[in-house]
Length: 137
Image 1 (cartoon, rainbow, N blue to C red):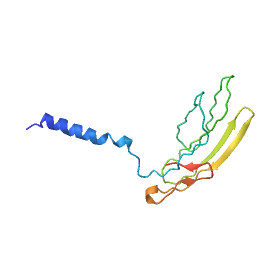
Image 2: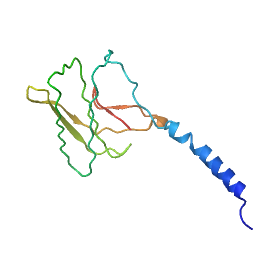
Image 3: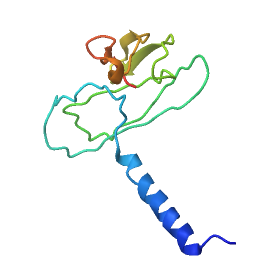
């Protein structure tokens, strides 16, 4: 006895219907820090972004880019994200951020990123490294 074709279609549709909401739901472990408005204005320029994804124990990543000569920058912010390899394991990480804004290389910070984290559902709170660096899970 073969499986009825309409039965297969019905089960397939129910399975698809059950999977549709999954990408739109939030993780129960999310325990982030609320966003804060720092600057508000009309943006007439653009956004520059780049990424480096690598593996291994040590990495030095240098990103170089040029702005057009007519560019006027009124306000800018540099974000650096360091992947710590696991949501809760407390691995040793250090990030040294240097920036050359046109007047020579300056070290903006050396951040020790070894911070324990407990999921919010288990009573944990955001893990701040200092006043501008936190652990994102």
